[in-house]
Image 1: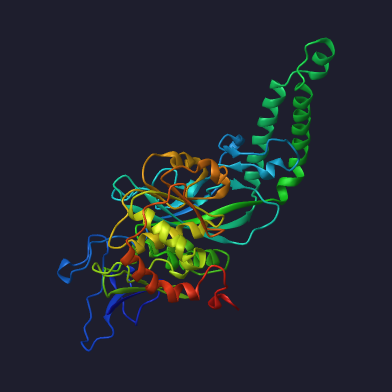
Image 2: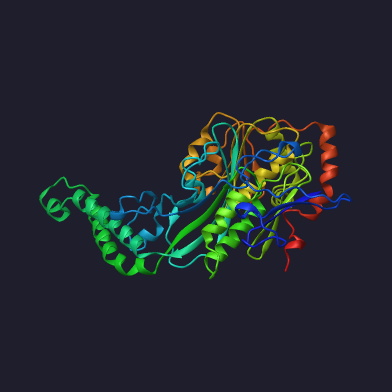
Length: 453
């Protein structure tokens, strides 16, 4: 096994200096032969083909900061959804369309472009202001580009005090919204008194206008103390989900702590200088902050040797009978809809199912985390594997149809009006015998001993 060691702390590695600031080594471990590859001085063209290593690919493509769109006069804000009744708290319940605030690099790569609308995957339910700071949360998503390749996204959401420029932007947005409603509303009292054919809905409309005026007066004091949700997003062509999550945590921690190294230098070091390990026994070790991470890819002849997510997540979520139904639906290229209030669980369970399909590969529509703006894909007459939040769809009984298997990950239930064909009897018995020890250990109806503190 070879290990590529990359130090992200911008210090000399083992007292040696390499050109262009690269501190990357490939060393031999777990072998009796001591050898050392030359230092990698430039990662941009490609690795040496004589060593049988892959061409140059970045370990991560893009780093994004996503939140409320920036812009004056409230014109850049777009409302996704809002409560129907106007009240002093309605602006806190309004969901805005997210936008990319900052990104690195500034321009797209020719070989791997940034998919349009990727900010919707960072905030599938939209950006909603909060009256108190929320604990940082994370989730994952997968986006399929035009040529069929998949981009993996890791999102770390956090709360930030609403800045002064955003206070003015939101105030301008609501003042504009209130002004439009006041112009559209007739003088209800005069019309209602003079016309015998008065619309009974006019008093309700006047109440809405009065509520808007009350909302306008409350914005000045309320917005100053509110929090804006933001997120850090890392986009990569490789599914190193657990490692990328640790990188995101360290970047967020470093951004809140005094440091002699600029944050931009750490990002550029990780995105531009860390090599991608080839499939097989070579691993890349990367240090950032207080963490030392190992990036390793499985060999070509055994791609499920290294699982993207721990397989226990699946068996803690679904019973064996439900797993059999979902696996049969995927193998027969049916429509599978995952539903869960946990955004991170949607992608994790979907990825595990795809790895359990080996040696078969899912080549149909795959959106493990579907934003609210793309819920129309659920009605597509094509095989798909889609995951979504339960608030994005009506009651499950309304969307149930033949050929669609609905998996409720929160209740560990499967709804299938027309169940898919069962797996062959003999392979099914072997599968059950192999999975029996796992199901007894991580059954959904019993707590996991590993998670106890």
